[in-house]
Length: 386
Ligand SMILES: Cc1cc2nc3c(=O)[nH]c(=O)nc-3n(C[C@H](O)[C@H](O)[C@H](O)COP(=O)(O)OP(=O)(O)OC[C@H]3O[C@@H](n4cnc5c(N)ncnc54)[C@H](O)[C@@H]3O)c2cc1C
Image (cartoon, rainbow, N blue to C red; front, side, top):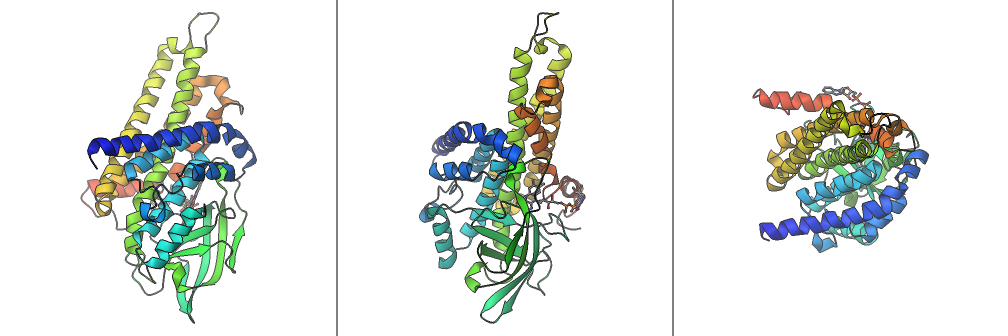
């Protein structure tokens, strides 16, 4: 496909996402946030639009989109509803991992997920190791004809509301970081228990609950075989990391758009000019504009690098998540400042963006871990070492 054709296709996908986001997601965002309800209706609309299969290959009924198109779509969804964008990003990241495994069983599973309008959650965080995806303590070990999966995942977006869980586990003796086992566990599996722990200050609709696991699964549920998950994880990681970065970007964009409109329309009776007439407000708008623009370029750049060479994209991905997570927090804070009391009211979407913006930097890789890796890389040290 030529560069122009690729760009046109990306624009088409973003237009489709924009339509669903503004028609369906945006009008429901306040209610889902207020009641912390899982946005199943939004996901049904995304299924109808064919967007839930965005990162699934065309051979299994998906859209076969590339990462630059994907991050643009995620940001578009996040502009309307941060929680839905996050659920979507987890599902797409998991789809990309399944797509990397060419075994007929996994192909069939992914085809069924696309065809039957199913949703996948991605549980990597654990009570013992936080959001460090490279250090799972969930175990997967052979037992009879199957595989025993034991442990606990925490903060698993969509838990209790999805059809499948993608888990990463250790299979014992394999060396840390070199080997992992990836499991696709259906929601009704005996021994899989969801605990409704979620009551977040932001991203309230995403229902990131705990999952306790003591289940016997069949070998077909082990994606890539015992200890064979690392290459699949490496292929899918950009969709996970950049999906989180793009969610932050979309939230920053939404806050920025809200503030731009507000400072143009709000006029002080004594001066006769709008808030934009104050130089102090314009300076803050400049800072927010620069942060949004930088995040957008950094996320798109990382998506292009990761699309070309996913195994050599770690630095670009870390920078993108760092810049976008920080941009969301900074921009939401600036926008709250210039919008005054109006933005602070719960009737304004800005207060939701403000709370939602806080989640990104806590999510793996958290801001501290990102800064450590970015600095090590800048200093010529290996960012993959502890
Ligand atoms: C809204 C939301 C949705 C989520 N959805 C999912 C999901 O779908 N799937 C999933 O698996 N997880 C999910 N998570 C979990 C998330 O990815 C993190 O695992 C979780 O927030 C970590 O919390 P913790 O208390 O264990 O952090 P801790 O590991 O205790 O870390 C606390 C803080 O310590 C510092 N820190 C930790 N490690 C390092 C380090 N290596 N270097 C420097 N500083 C460090 C950071 O400041 C960090 O924020 C979600 C979290 C949130 C908030």
